[in-house]
Image: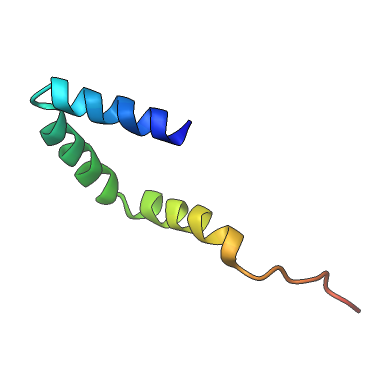
Length: 57
């Protein structure tokens, strides 16, 4: 499924000449939002963080 989506994206980028410039502009706009960047990085890092047990009394 991942390869199918990547192939569709590559096909779209090759058929529409303005698509790479629009993609770069969209990434630049999203990267300029610090809260969004922090949220996405937190989501990506979550599976690799150690899970702590419950607090004990």
